[in-house]
Amino acid sequence: MMSYCQSSLLLVIPLYALDLGASPGLTALIFSLRGLGNMVADLPAGYITIRLGPKITMLLGLALMSAAASVGMLINSSLHLGLFSFVAGSAMALWLLARLTLIGDNIPNDHRGKALSSLGGIQRMAGLFGPVSTGFIALAYGFSTVLMVIAIISGCALILLFFTLEKTKPNKQAANANTNNEPSSTDLKKLKLLLLDHQGIFKTAGLAVLLLTVVRSARLLLIPLWGAHIALDPSAIGLVVSFAGLIDTCMFPLAGYLMDRFGRKYAAVPCLLLLSCSLLLMPLSQTALQLSLIAVLAGLGNGLGSGVTMTLGTDLAPPTERAPFLSVWRLLNDTGSFSGPVLIGLITAATTLAGAFVTSALLGLTGLYVMTFLVKETLQRSNES
Image (cartoon, rainbow, N blue to C red):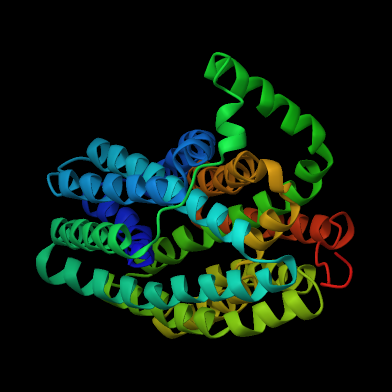
């Protein structure tokens, strides 16, 4: 249900911005505020998860999403849409960090690939319906109605989670460490130590994941923008996105098999390669069919990377510092989500929309090099651990 909300937002935010009269560059900036909201909330989300537990943190994320979408129904300017985009991104950060911590604490290393790729597959299944329904609802009833649907669905998810998920305990060891000190001072010291202790990981695997996220966020924004550029209506763009999403969704079993059988890099490397190639080809499309075919190639690459960033993060996270480590890991991911659209906006304003595709593809190829040659494999067999 939360995946439906997220996939709907990825389509509705850029199209709503264009409908309000924003330029492609301003649209990219508004879209990037979702990533900025993620970034701002990532580190606090890690420490909230330590103190309150994953369940309560996820409930907070759902409540914030429902409230933001409810207020968002009153949007009448690009400024209001930007504020909504920021708050929705913060809500997703709370939800995603707590969920990832819960999975990392309960799933062994050599089963995480399948578990997290399956989770990615479930997200993609929900994402199939999101863009199609969002496009048709927006065309028939307007964008405010889309936000009303998001508010209702996230509210229903909150109620469902509250009654079905067993209460999770906060990390008592981490929480108790702050009882005799000022929390802010202690948390900052621990964060500095964490960054120093694992700086090699963040400089290599973290960089590769950041660049992968830049390419993924670029794809999510550039497909609707290019569809609007070649004069497709919202429903047609929604169909293109969902058709690509169908291929994306079908790949998650293969992604999980590759990660748990051969290694995480066997999924991450082809993911980066195919995404980069699709971005290079997309500006050549001039019809809905051509755009659909290239979007399918992007979906194929993205699907091969289903769950790969989450799997790498949970593999690399030390068990005693899982939540704070993953909050930094999520921050790297969300830095990519934020910087990708900002970069697209700047490049589009300075050159052309096609130039944004080329730049995004080059960043993807850089990530491909880092992932291939600088990142160590993290898969551990049961008899090795």
